[in-house]
Each structure stands twice: as structure tokens, then as C-alpha cells.
Length: 195
Image (tube, rainbow, N blue to C red; front, top):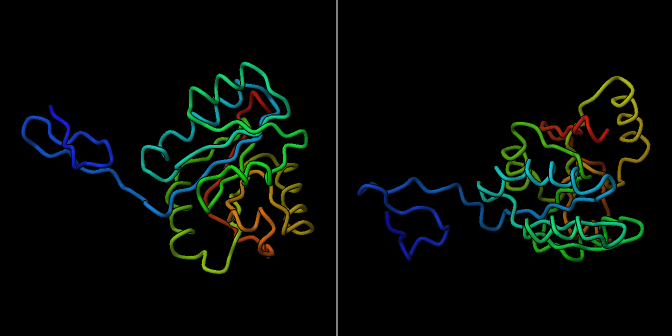
């Protein structure tokens, strides 16, 4: 096996004389993932590990971890994953958005796990439907109480950014006004261990 120096994606170029199939590469459609930490490094690791397929597909370009205080365990997880660590008392999405390298940002809480199909849904929203829309909202799975709570939040606080939202950085930095979110067909669930 040898690596092709012209191959910028880092994929194996040839194995046994055959050319390896290239990964899907998103170029300008990559996103940053912001993860707020409130349940500790174990929940953070669960969320980061759920993002690996999107990193491999080229959709997730970088991650920013927002923690309420500096601690060695969270810092070690950030270092090991190559993520940027931001300390913010109020865990503000805006503080994390200032460190994002991409225009589109997926906001998650530690312990959130995007469900099957989310990579395709986010890619389609960014490339096809996001011309004047700055906010896409993933569905939240859960019991009837959680669904009712999410429905009420969507109805009365439609423009507020929350975990499970794909939002343009300009909206998080207050450069454009967020209108009603576009409901996306993908969902995000909480790991049961972290409520």
C-alpha cells in the first residue's frame, strides 16, 4: 500500500493495485459543532464519538467545547479530540460561535446523540434550502412530556437557538435576525445516562 501525494483527503490511494474509492468531500459545506458541557467529560465523550461518522464523511470540520470552568478532564478530552475549549460562565452559544471556523454551526449539549440520517439531512439543508434561512431545527425524541415541552418552546420561543439547532454563524453573532426555524427531518436524542 502506498499513499498518493496528490490525494488531499488522506485516503488510501492504492491497495493491491486498485484505487480506493474516495470519501464524500463537502468542501465549503462543512460545519462546526458547538458542545456545551454541563454533565462532565463522560457525556462529552458520548457526544463527540457520535460525530465520528460525520467527520469521516467530511461534514464536520471542527468542534468547539463550551465549559463553565476549566477542568483537567474536559481539557484532556478537548485536546484528544482536536477541539477548541472555550470557558464561559453562562455557556453561551455566542462565545463558542466566535471560535467557529465554519459558517454553519450545529449546537449540541453534552450527552446529545444525533440519530441515523442526520448527516444527509444537514448537508441537504445547507446546500439546497438555506438561502435565506439561518436556522434549522432537529427533532427531539423522547416521551410525551418532552415532546410537549419542545412543542411549547418552538411555538413561543421560535427564534431562540437551542441544542439540536443548525444555525448560521451570522445569526449567532447577531448579524442577521433569526426567523422561524425550518424543522428538519433528522432527530437528536439524549443518552439516557445523562438525562
